[in-house]
Length: 259
Image (tube, rainbow, N blue to C red):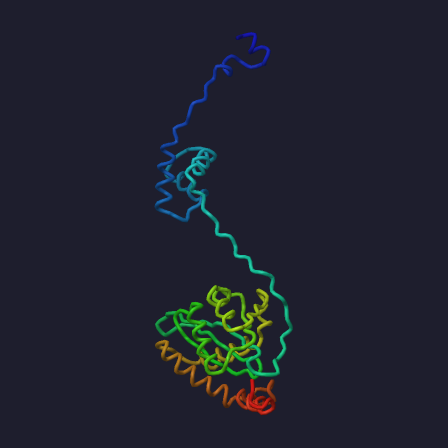
């Protein structure tokens, strides 16, 4: 034995050493307790809490046990959007060629938040509708678009941003059902949806920032009256100082009453 140790150049104590299995039960109890109390804590925060409790365990040992217990927080992967094509914003020659859709938010007098979904025809800048609600999931938005489509017909294109409501399954299926192409603007490029962005600013200045709302019905009533005024009385320089409805009548006359 001595000869073997000399040949291997190791001491006899190293040769005879037997690893002792560490008892990690106390560490497991501490980690389990923290995991139940603080579900969103990661390892760094848990280790600091363990030190606060006076334990002197080595961080490598604690991390090994932490991984064995599979307490690693799973990170939700960032949802990747397909590349969006940049298309120059051009005013359509006819109505129902392209609509723009966007969302806004504000609050009631009580402090409760609400949202609006705004729909605009890019041709004559007509406000096709504004719906206010505490919540606007995709299903409710598509129902609102169906209500507009039932009296006006559906557009060839709907221009939207990359918000969760617009990329949702319900919205995509609605578009396929009615033969509507959804044109998603590039992320972070609101200027590619400039018609509705300009409309939103006007709506903000003349309605949302000018009134105090007690309820959703209060918002909807004031908004509906404003939409009538916007479409029927407000001249637009971009339309040759015609109102949206006057411009629409002019366009319909030139196309024999057809969209």
